[in-house]
Amino acid sequence: MRAAGFTEPGGPEVLRLLELPTPEAGPGEVRIRVRAAGVQPYDAIVRRGWTPPGVAPDQRPTVPGNEFAGTVDQVGPGVTSIAVGAEVLGFGRLGAYAEYLVVPADQVVPKPAAMPWEVAGAFSAGAQTADIALGDLAIGPGDTLLIHAAAGGVGTVAVQLARARGATVLGTARPENHDYLRALGATPVAYGPGLVDRVRRLAPQGVDAALDGAGGDALAASLELVADRKRILTLVEHDRAEELGIRVTSGARSAARLAGLANRYAAGELRIHIRRALPLAQAAEAHRELETRHGQGKIVLLP
Image (cartoon, rainbow, N blue to C red; front, side):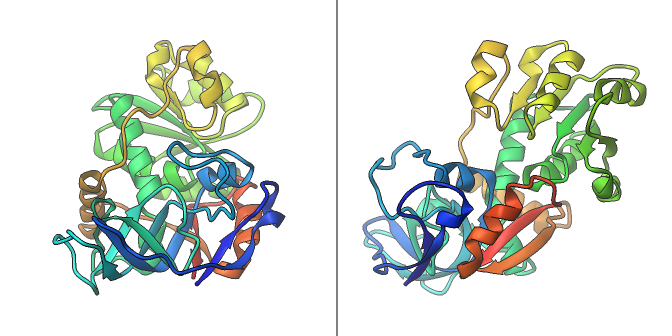
């Protein structure tokens, strides 16, 4: 099979097209013929040399990608919950930048018929991360939530889920993404010097919680604006969270959570924007664009 991966960590240029053995489904597993795989910051961290928990550190070549959609084409012994031919979306640790992927059967759920393949492939990570984070922050009616990188993959879903919980949402983004945030239900705020003052003018009653998808100055602004540090959660500065007394996501992804979110999409309650879909051979280009951190929604690869 074809896959996009690397033999040595580094910049986007280390990603190249590989020919690898097609995996076989073992007990309790299913093999997916991948139709679309989401590209996310997690993948870039892996590409730069980080090894996810449970993965052998010397595993090479490494194929990134931990969210996907496709068709089940093989089921392993003991799998009775899903059949060959089922259209699914799901999650794993690595390996989604490939034509075929093997995962435990309890990490896939049915793809809603109305969900395009590109959306399905880019849905799991952003949707589940946003849902977990809002639960950790206990976002509810009357809260004012500040979301940094609000136009990105996680931010897009977090804005919508927070609004559904009854919160007022302020979202930081570049000016060209402000209309996009308004359409999602957030009040946009420009990055840069004076951010804290701009937020205070928009929320004179104060900011109750912050979801940080940008780090750096954005996180510093959150620390100044939110009184209770247990209501600040960072998605990017994990190494500083403990010393600052702030949160990182605590929950685990699950098929039940994913199925619930997919049902909300099918019901028209969630909007997912795909800004670019690229062939597998252009994985390096996908990572270069990802690392600009300025686009709306998600990037996907199409094996």
